[in-house]
Image (tube, rainbow, N blue to C red):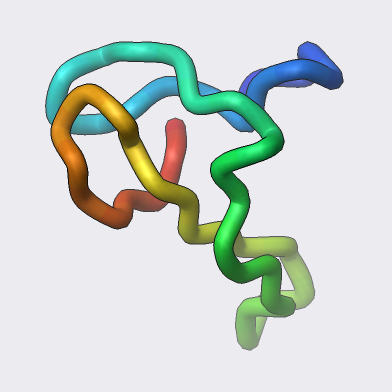
Length: 50
């Protein structure tokens, strides 16, 4: 995941940066790490940013 405060990472489908404002869900995974789901405005879909 990207450490830039303004972005959450990149869309795994199109590669566009996903900005923090598009965050939908933040959750704790079974292994204790944080998972996120966000909206990609380019793909118009919900993704797990990389």
